[in-house]
Image (cartoon, rainbow, N blue to C red; front, side):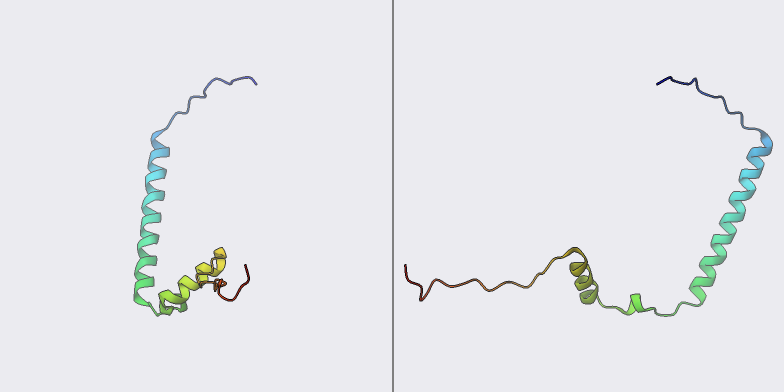
Length: 79
C-alpha cells in the first residue's frame, strides 16, 4: 500500500470567526434547552421506578437469575 504525503491545511481568520460564532450559537441553544427542561420537570416513569425493578430488569436482560436453586440432598439415597 502506498503512503500519501500529509496535506497541509491552512486555517484562515474567517474560518476561526465562523467557528467561534457557531460555538457561541450552540452554547446558547444548549443553555435554552437546559432552562426549558428544568422549568417543566415532571416525574417520568424512569425516575419513579425504584431500584429493585431496575435491578430486576438488568438481571433479566443479562440472563442472571439470583434465586438459589435447591440442591438435592444425599439423605435417603442408597450408596
